[in-house]
Amino acid sequence: MVSERDLGREFDKLVGEICVGLGFCGGIVDEKPSHIRDFLPSAGPISAEDFALWALQADGMSKAEYPEHYRSLRNAFIEHMGSRTIDVSEISSSLWVAE
Image 1: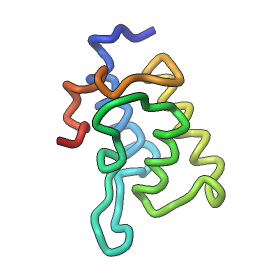
Image 2: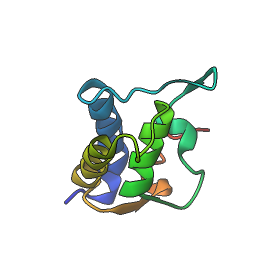
Image 3: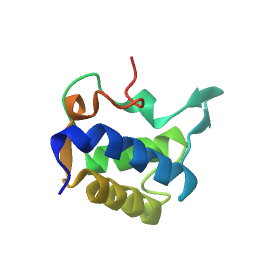
Image 4: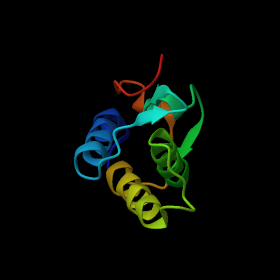
C-alpha cells in the first residue's frame, strides 16, 4: 500500500510507465495536442476507470475500440495508487496536475 505522501511521486511513475511501457503519451486529437493531464480535474476524485478512459482519450482512442488497453491502464492505476480511487489533492505535488 502506498502512503498518501507518496502518491504524487507514484502518479508520476504511473504516467511515465504508461507512456514508455504502453505507449500512451498523448497525441494530437482534433488538431490539438492532448495529454492525460488535460483531463485531470482541479478537485475531487480520480478513479482507475476515469484514468484509463482519459489516457485513451488523450491518444484519440476509446474503451469500446481498445478494451484490452483500457484494462491495462486501469490495472496500472490500481497497482501504482494502491486503490481504485484517489483524490486529486493527493497528487497535488505531481508535475502532472494541470495548473
